[in-house]
Length: 501
Image (spheres, rainbow, N blue to C red):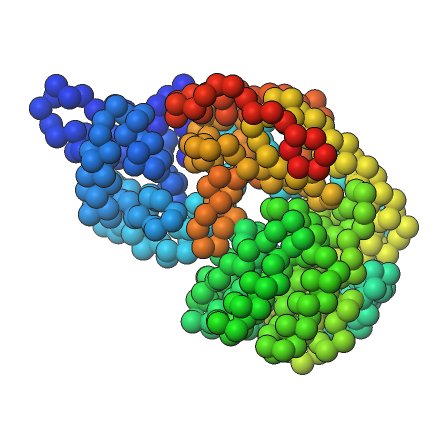
């Protein structure tokens, strides 16, 4: 939503105007769209919440929403609320109602895609990248200057499957992580997201089923849905995906793929135990289903290194491993990789070819120079220290300023996954938080089958400690104000120490 903090999202109706209240509310929503306070893809407040804000009955809001659905402006989704899917008629574009031609999955993508809140003083916990001050800028500059340019090869397109120098470098890098892969078993992608697109192109057809953790990275389940697949979430606990629920889902749905984030799962931070990893591999073999292992955060541990990757234990060729440079501090280079058994490489390669035909040699050579040098381990050590400092700043600030939040202290990665106190939901909190100058990501964005409304994800890696503390202070004030509007008692809960707070 594009909303000035001092401007109401939807104007209150006037009971003395003579016009039906539900039509006034419907017109106010259209005016909010014309003014830019609402846009296609935005999720509207729940009926009960909006009724409370506008001082009308829930029936009035229900009637307004139904009227706007009939006009093609809103669409209701069970478990996911009401979303803007169209705009009021505009004479400039009356010939073609573009908004009504948007694919449903694109509308869902608009709902979960993160846009940094407007305003220089807004503290954003919603991003998924480290602070640019943590990038190895000087090292990359020196490595870039040293790249040989004599034959102009750096400016030619590299093969779709990847630059041979980078593939060779990655083979050695992966070996140091216990993963044995020849260069021919490595496909270079333009970032991790393209890796998911390539997987979907190569293996999914409409009607297939993909199992993912729930919650999980939204870019994954939306990509699979874009390919026409049905996505089924499998619950996660503190030790990663629940293998009993995974086995049940494998037997019931017979999926085409299973997508997992075993190390510092996004968004929960869970680490799949060694025993569960062994069981996941057994189930993959038993049900003859490939497992896509996304390992973007495994090197970003603070106290304890995660167990060996699934791919490192994959003796049967059932795992496709995904890695990338973005979480290593190289997001602008857009370099990722898939490691797959040779029988899968032909389909992956042709899918990659039709994604972008060629890949940029310059950025791949720079990534190879960095990953193949001692600089990478020094940088990772620094990144772990810096992110741990920021994690500790967030944990301390949340305990002080947001004692009602409950969360596990993350052991690595960039995020804390926090549960809101009842009856507060993320959709209720977000607009109030923006009024206080702080942005968070709602848990519903990470839930493939609905749910997550009582959680938020907070990224601490993107902010220096002083901004983290100030952001937590603002968040605490926003929570108390939102709870007060819901009639909750103003007395904060008692913080709990040792692991879970």
